[in-house]
Length: 258
Ligand SMILES: NC(=O)c1ccc[n+]([C@@H]2O[C@H](COP(=O)([O-])OP(=O)(O)OC[C@H]3O[C@@H](n4cnc5c(N)ncnc54)[C@H](OP(=O)(O)O)[C@@H]3O)[C@@H](O)[C@H]2O)c1
Image 1 (cartoon, rainbow, N blue to C red):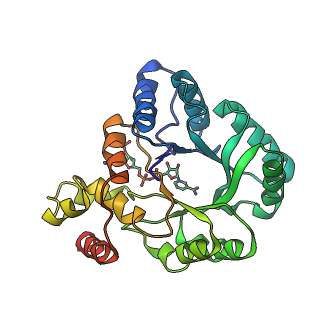
Image 2 (cartoon, rainbow, N blue to C red):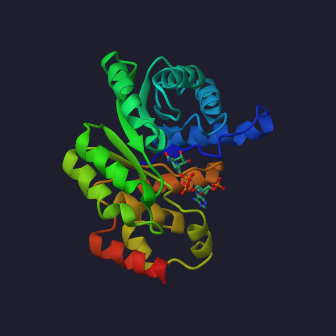
Image 3 (cartoon, rainbow, N blue to C red):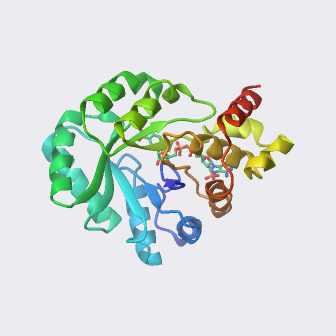
């Protein structure tokens, strides 16, 4: 239920100095029971960095590797997905997602073929902003999907109106992106946590943000991005202990909004 995003954070060069902390990020993730790692060809060389580091750690088969197709046209999509397999150093991906619904009708046909052939285990679609929800809703209603990935957080709650209930009704697993909405966490994290945060086992604001998301009944997994091993350790603690009930979630939201 707690994985790792790689946008920006894993788009780095080959020097040992920049890669060593990221290798530790992956190591800590796996040690603490995390499995899902989300990437995309849109994220520069992030897929290659994940592939190299996971291979070095011997964790490629332990991880649940999720990436995306982000191009137009069948042939370009196939070429990009083949490239992702090479970069992630695997023969089969756990999840292939259509990034921001780009040319989704074309790619969905390919993904069904790849799933039938055993080259991917699951297929899905992603979006990151509420301006995409009308189309996302149409796809979720009209197509059988395994996963949807969408933005949802204490700073961006729109998905809970239509997308999360729909995914829940249709039996579609939900991965949440942008869980910490950068600026919002920055604004609150130097303030003292309310004493009642300990009632649901939170020691930090990041854990409050993550548990608030994980407590939504439609949410399967959340994928905060980080380049810092200590942040992975902190974030993974949101996957253990008590989750807030709905009344406590609203109390948390009101506090952060204030
Ligand atoms: N359309 C799409 O498909 C789409 C769109 C957006 C995102 N995504 C996926 O979702 C993932 C997550 O979204 P995101 O990376 O945009 O945003 P995010 O996870 O909400 O925020 C990432 C930022 O939070 C910081 N952070 C992480 N843990 C922290 C902690 N414990 N304390 C303080 N700061 C912390 C990280 O900085 P440090 O490095 O300093 O920890 C990083 O700058 C992406 O990496 C990507 O895989 C997909």
